[in-house]
Length: 220
Image (tube, rainbow, N blue to C red; front, side, top):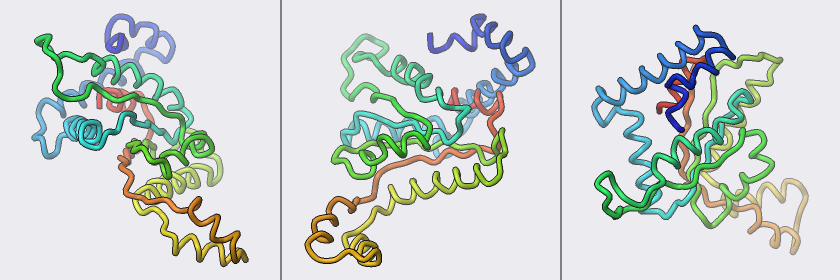
């Protein structure tokens, strides 16, 4: 189940990554749980994310949420979080067994950002269905390789900025004219290059991916 890793089933994790790392994972979850229990609503991260999700799901008709980690070590995080979110919010009744008067949770999906950029980002940028997205990245990488991580973070910020700002017809026209395109070909291509912006995203940044950080992200 979605809580198994915190239980005795977590023994397999401890055997795989070491007991000290497993304890750090538990500590991270505990820190986030305490934050949720003891922090006022206006500064409460899980509560804020929950309300944002409720808002877009019920008032904007957003039926899916994309989880987009910019770290290959988190490549299975979206798949794991499908259970964490969809099993928790997947019922059509409340705790008392009464039918919900709001939508149940959205469909959770996603891929590492570098994969998604070449697969489904066009739908998020230009599609006529709203897809809120959570962008997740460590500031410091586990595997430094030249400027690779700096370029990765540049993509992270460029995507969220583009989803926020969009690109107007005038901006597209200038870009195409700069590339030497004119006339009917230019006019036909413009609508395919425009995107409206104002697409909702959350940017979740943390210093470095550690067992404790991962525990906090799972509990978040």
